[in-house]
Length: 263
Image 1 (tube, rainbow, N blue to C red):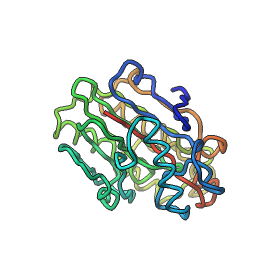
Image 2: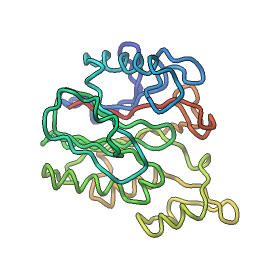
Image 3: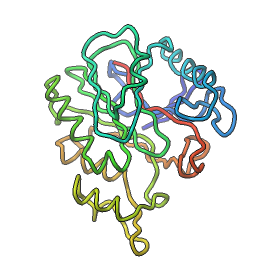
Image 4: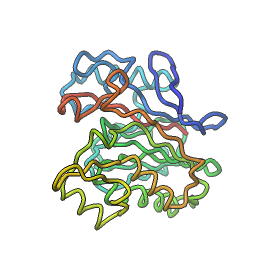
């Protein structure tokens, strides 16, 4: 994964994008117009940042890829398991802003789609032969509820994608040493996606440090994706203030970066 500058913005680009017809990546916090504490490329409407600032930032992002702001599709993320499938042309993407979903799958070219994060992990999936893409918002609930598995299954059901053909990119999120969770989270993983002993380390009675990145990678491997087809952003959102927003570091008052794809 490498840092790329394009226009006013910079983003982390998965290794498999080079030579691919798809464009994909994970934005940093830099290259926008928002003022502290949302400085500067805050792309999330669900913050206290001024609406016109977010619109300006989205314009900076889309224009860097020769798109118009109305060609950016994001949804209302609710830490659930619903998946939005877009398999027809849409000339107005604004109505998707109110659709409750935590994953997007599409085979439609010509627009940008993505998920917004500020410690949760954005995961991108791409089937190069069929040219189908997905963006998944993985917090602890999404990881425990196997949202990645549900997304891969939906890609197979709707478009015929095979897991072994998929390329993946796991974007920036919070590292385990900054992410302490309680028994409710442990129980959710034990009842759901599992791997608890491989992704959690107990720090005190009823407290664990949770490695969500490792959870994503283990789930992708279980699903049949090839490890050599997966790119990973190693930098932690909480540690790297100069690059990323972090909900936990900034005590909830912060912006959002985007994991995005254009087919």
